[in-house]
Length: 447
Image (cartoon, rainbow, N blue to C red; front, side, top):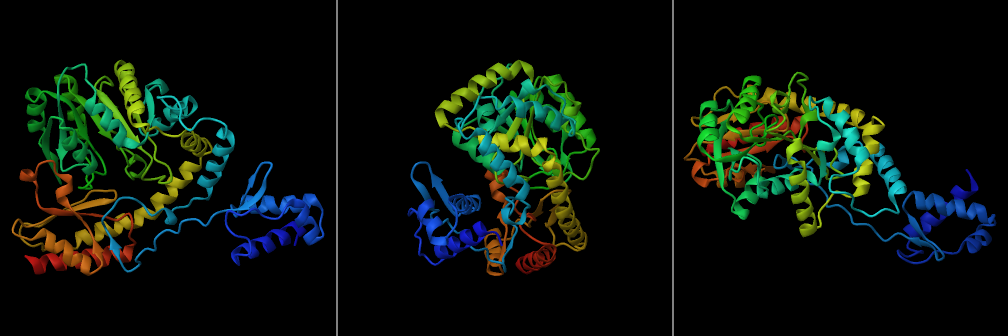
């Protein structure tokens, strides 16, 4: 073993035994050299090894210090089947490549301010222009804005005037819970259109576009949360056509595009006139270490969106850090993101097949009970109206099964169709099979 490794391991052991306390200054280079009978360069190399492994840190002109004890993540209940959230378990995702990119980004931008231009780093936007082509989004980098996730963009768009001079926002029901919460709290005029396992009523959509004073229609065409469904090609084409016909903008949330196994699926944006279409994309579900999203704005809205985003920026001090953006750029540029996505798809394909298989087995459902599922992470179970939903959820929790109430995904309590959402992000195949069986058993006992 190299001498510097012997020294670094000896110091590490003393730190673990609390002989060197966290936050306290370690012996000087000269002291280490005398203590271990080595050259000063060897002592420096030993400390550099400890720095690289985040055990100690260096302070210029002061020396080396023990890193303070880090927070310990709460232990997961391994007996619990968690169907309640779409937030992935970070510790189950491959992270070595990402850590390398993060370290490189920190080195490159260590002397640059944490925040950057309203639009985002230009080199990343140019790269994303090419990246988006894989998903049939053809646009100039000048139309791309980097944001702190999708919610930030939705907040800005909801408060921003549009050239059609209309006021109401149309949303699917059910839909994204956090956006519903924002619309209610902000008191924004909102209309809804019913979406079910078969999609939506295109005639009803046209009527709303024609008469509802709709500024924009917010839609999640594929991997819908909470239904887990995807719009057919016919529906996507029709929505694009109606947007142009009635001067209604489409805000398309394509948050999980990378995880689609249907390579022929094109977003609504691909069928539209690129005048009435705003495309949203998030990286949070596939790269949960950073919160970055993007939007593709039509050219005539760029200046207006930039102005409102700048106002939002100054008001909330919220923007994607330059280090996070640089990390994503390195991750994409080196092709590491493609390997990461392929690995994730391999992991999730087994879960998705398992969920489909378990749902397919449920041929004799109680009256008033039905499943919605198409692809992706989510599925929804509609429940009989007379069933006590809260008691069902409580009983499932007693069996270590956690699900989400469907009420969160409906804008209006009067239009709420009783149900529960499940998500397979934090489960394995055995848990999916056992969990679905237990959920259906509890429903049957509750009917």
